[in-house]
Amino acid sequence: MFNSAIIEVIVGMIFIYSLLSILVTQLNTLLTNLLNTRAKHLMDGIRQLISDPVIQAKFLSHPLIQLVPPERGSMPEDTLSAQSAQDVSSRQPLTVNYIPPTLFSQAMLDIIAAQAARNLYKPLYDAAERALNGADEARAREMIRRLQGSTLTLDELRSYFETLPAPARQSLLITLDRVQKAQAALATDDSQAKLIPLLEGIRHIQEPIFQKAMDTLLATARSVDEAAAKMEFWFNTRMDQLSETYRRNIQYLSIVVGLLMVLTLNVDSLHVARTLWDDPALRATIAATAQASIDNDSLQPDLNPTPAEPGAEPNTGAAFNEARDSIDQLLTLRLPIGWELAEVEGGCADPSLNPTECNNPRNLWNLLPANNSSWLGMWVWKIVGYAITVIAIAQGAPFWFELLNRLARGRSS
Image (cartoon, rainbow, N blue to C red; front, side, top):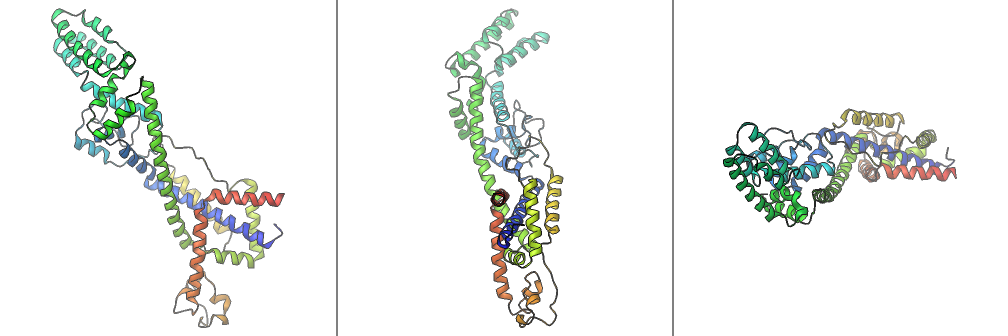
């Protein structure tokens, strides 16, 4: 088809490397889905990012995140002991492999601001519980919650307290004055009023390193939106580093998977290339299949996969079917791969007497020292062939697909 034996051998080898690289990628996907590797890696990154054990546990189980199963007692407003926090953080992660930055910032701001409920605003809740009953208490608690959520001002709450009977009014107004002084100590100006729950929450973070990180990150924020933006930038920066580490780990996994696949399928590049050179019919068939694959874009890998949504189940069945289809395609090509085990009639004490059978590197019988006097040389060439295959697979499917495309375009030109 390409009117050149050398070009057809090259195209055939590139096509085979493309198929093998795609198969390795599919096997990687299958393994990572089965082992839930992405979620575990993400969870390890979150543990490094959020070093405070209580806030870490609350984040992992937050209803917006759910890296681990949420349960009562680990919500942002709950008091969580160190042991309970450790129990939450040590659970196996759910199948969450991606967290949008906006969800990260919303969950973190929610958790940090919830600290203020037990510290800054708790005296108000306690005073309302002591001084009021029934509907008045319920209304007072609701207004305090609105103050905590920055949807109600101190003056509005003060106006409501002044309408209450004298004993309750006096107690609540005194407590409100204390809260106002605490807020004034936290806010440098009026623009930071809505940040007060966050600033108070940061002040009560127990782990000093994480407290310093949050204080440094949010100290210059002038609004809640700006605080969220800073939190998202911090998260994106650390997730970029985490993604780079994950890509390196996947590359190492690809090499291991590729090596095991090469040994299992006995993909010896030197033997495959020599067979293609000696067999014009096989060479032409593979070259034609490669050309058809280029024309149909059937080999093109997904270079920019869409990240899975939080909580989405990995499609392990689809990954298995894709890997099986790739193996079937390799077998359909009838390549000189795979193992044989058959005794050579007459033996191979002198391989030159029966070169075809005695020099067959696919026959495991020939590679045993007791059976073939040339076993050492055959193993050396086979190891070199294996090394070439593994190195080729490590380049990745996009590399071979692009090279195959360039060859096809050059031929067309």
